[in-house]
Amino acid sequence: MKKITAIAALLLLATSFLVGCGEESGVESADNTLNVVTTIGQITDIVNNIGGEHVSVTALMGPGSDPHQYTASASEVNRLQDADIVFYNGLFLEAQMEDILEQIGERKPSVPVSRDIARDNLLASPLYDDEYDPHIWFEVPLWMEAAKTVRDTLIEVDPAKADDYRANADGYLAELEALHAYVQEQADRVPESKRVLITAHDAFSYFGRTYGFQVLGLQGISTASEASTADVQRLTNFIVANEIPAIFIESSVPVRNAEAVQAAVANQGFTVEIGGELFSDAMGDWGTEEGTYVGMVRHNIDTIVGALLAE
Ligand SMILES: [Zn+2]
Image (cartoon, rainbow, N blue to C red; front, side, top):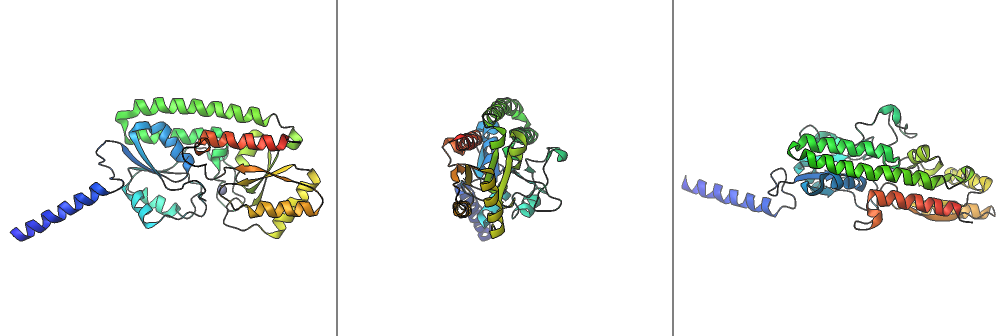
């Protein structure tokens, strides 16, 4: 009996040692912060802004990660299981992770931030039947809806700090409102005939709808398919016929597709510039301006407008 008790005590000690050394200790974290796990950086940014000091956020997908293709490692699955709340985009953006994200939702809040956006306000996916285009963060007012869903979830899970979450959300939403006005103002500087945005994959349809750009992608709405020769030819003909001055590359998509178009355009005796790198599905490096949602959106519109207005 004594021996068994001793072993049990040792086991208990070992367990608490493991928990103490764990990177995230889960629900009962000693400092009383919520342990939140997010997928894309744009969501991490919302949670940090609204949760402030009350949350400790683990972001699964860093700069350059492609959410369409991302699969969770075993340790990341553990992190998801240890979290108090999980936030993801939904709308089949995290295509390889949707099952696990939904499963985790049976035991704890695992919330798609797209949850509360009216479905008739979403664009259809050109690629998958019965799915929507998931790239909602490019339409700032839609991303404000996502921020409200985060706010409401934090309040529901942690009502004692509701006043802080509300105040933080008010501040962040005001920032996004100003961002929306800035993007519209910059977009309006480009003459309507020149408002054509050509990128590596079809991520910018919401951006085009809201800010008045025709949007063409070399690849489909997901990065899972390779651009075909026919895609390259179709875009090349369009660029030459419409004298489009610039096309854009994306931080989370290989550059070779855009270069193939550029070379094909040159073969037809026309020059199209690579107008710069846009942040589409992943944000810039942590700690830089483009590593925030506001900074990423500003970078994109400044890059687009600068290249399209350059002579
Ligand atoms: Zn995408």
